[in-house]
Image (cartoon, rainbow, N blue to C red; front, side, top):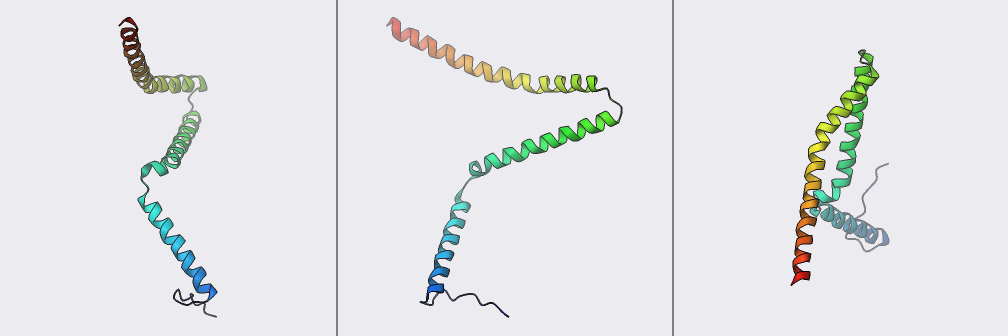
Length: 113
């Protein structure tokens, strides 16, 4: 048995439902096409974090199966994390302190005048 798609130009009930479904589908497709990367950013970040976790899990398993001591592995992991995160933390804190420093100077100037 062959299924026939309803004719969108007919005036019966199925035709009106088909037109409504087509309108919703097209308008939603246009909406999704107009969205930028910010709409998908949470999902992309989630996928990135999952890939990082799986990479860490695989590298841990490989290193421990090759005979690396768990204590040495923890030391290496902490060292690499510090090397990676220290510049980010320094720049972030510098930006915050820079903002608070100049906003407090501005506040003191306003109070003095």
